[in-house]
Length: 135
Image 1 (cartoon, one colour):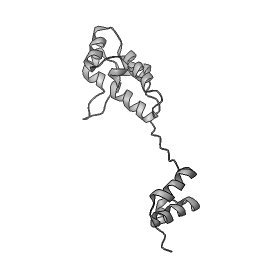
Image 2 (cartoon, rainbow, N blue to C red):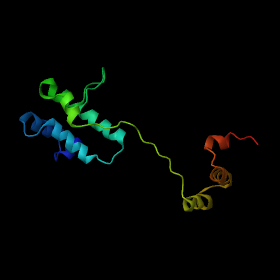
Image 3 (cartoon, rainbow, N blue to C red):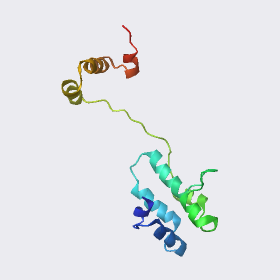
Image 4 (cartoon, rainbow, N blue to C red):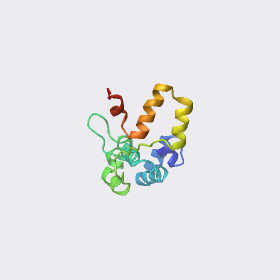
């Protein structure tokens, strides 16, 4: 993704441009940030950290630090200019619409599943609550 965001096919071409001084590492990170705009915050943070992060012990450093080394890449400067943003993971649960529920009940579900889906939709119970009922 980072390579494509910088109009290249091979990551080596982007790193060669950074070493040659044609483009800065931060500019390549900002191009990636523009490309992945609109993705979930956790995904954006993961991409930016993989490219320009410190890394973790025994797991290796970020890509640019590993390839370019400390002499040619400053993680602190990259982090200041290319923010990774909020690293929270978004979870959303979507309930079926009335039409989708009708389709499920009429076309897809067997009698047992119809009863379960009907009970869930009418009562608002969670699946665990419904299947734990004994009476």
